[in-house]
Length: 78
Image (cartoon, rainbow, N blue to C red; front, side, top):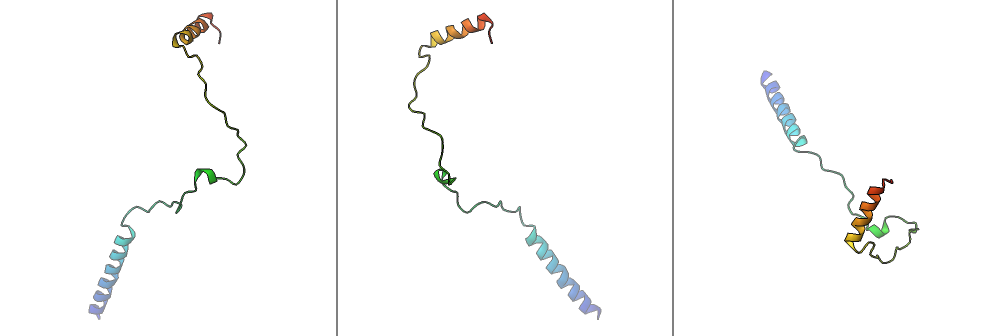
């Protein structure tokens, strides 16, 4: 009778050890979406923003820009 308890205990211990090892094998995987939606399809509503147009140069001469900054700093205005 004690032999059957030993066998059952050994089997139970083996099953618990195997379940513990497989259950804690590593960190859980991050859950992410299977696919990413393209940027132009992120919403169903129209985009109310308007195009800005081409860029234009402002303060093309660096020395004039620095002189304007220095003059503004010297005047003490904020």
